[in-house]
Length: 222
Length: 338
Image 1 (tube, each protein chain N blue to C red):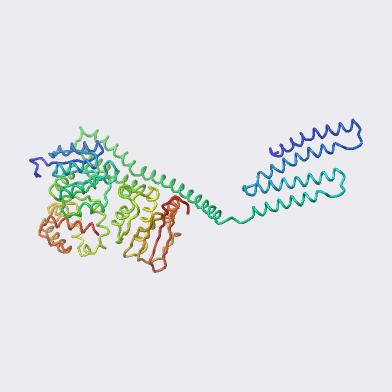
Image 2 (image 1 turned 60 degrees about the horizontal axis):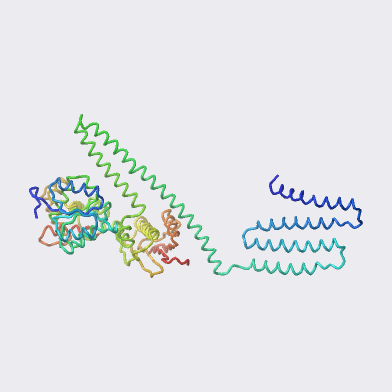
């Protein structure tokens, strides 16, 4: 797999609206991705994902034939076959229930964004790259709702307000450096906060990447 | 003069013609016996019969109408008998027998009509009342909902689209002269488009939440409780294939109950339980709060009850002061009236 600008990241696109599909393909190609397949239905998407094993898939939640959560189900089924297959799910609305289902296997490589985010091309392309690299990219809307009511959640109660802020940024999929920039603190300070968060949530694993996903899951489970 | 009275006068006028003709004929021929009285009698009977039946047929409701017709006929027959008796010179009062027989028939009819309704009829009458009320409620609510949607779209997404078009037009103008300003405006336009999408999402959620369409009632409620400030557990699962109207009504009912839990109950935990059998779905929303909730209180709950009424569902609130509050929603799943 190649994630740099120098070589092409292989993408499968699952989107049934022609306008949006073409737009996504054009945008991804313009940023150096290689779109290896574009499908407009759930069963076709699952087939392509399992056969082609792309570096990342960009998938609309609502796809034919049922026009319900066909895309999400295809994504989950594909990850059951190909563990950790990176998938970025797009939707007209976001639900924590879906975010939780996507992250449930604890492997990362998951993005879940509102379709609106496509309008900020830089951010969006960044999210696709992050997911392809095994990180997470949760929509700020999924995360925002959590900040309001988190007081009640037992493991999260022990977090300081600052740590909760850091966790929210982590859930969106930002790196320590990016979180530092957003909160106007040094990367080192962020690392201290994240270590505190991991400790308070009882995540002792040595793999930092995996711990980030588990922390986000704890967040979503509240 | 009313048309009714005019019609009666016209009839009397028409009737007067044969009477006058008979009287003149009798006067000219000079026969002793005053025979035209039989002509008067015939014409009078026809007039009275028409008048009485016309009145009787206007009586409502139907059960009473046929009793009125019966009464009019019986009365008319007795009247005819008595008149014939008088005109033919009196003597033994034979009309008494017919009068007795007819009054017996009439009394029997009246007794049948006035008998109280059977259990089944009472039930049907109650159901008709209930349906009439719920239909009116449903129609009112629908009209109010449409109005709200129209206003939300007008004030929200539509206004933003107008501003978006304006900003785009302006940035097009500025593109050559001041590219930096154009770029700023385009950024603004993008933000406006995103805000318009936000508005549309909110409106659509109010009409039919997307999770409900995608996953059905059970998961829609599970998705809902994840965003609440009070921890809520959801147990059981409603049947997957429910009629859309029913599913929406129950979803919004549960949503309203839970929002009341968060706003008013001071509860630390709540529970939503789906139970039931193939014929009926039961949903209970329980919280450990302060109690004292009443369906008469909030307008929110009133709207929910209207919505539930339209799908024949019941909502029952048990909320003693000090709690716990238990709201039970019972939804029949079969077409058969209860």
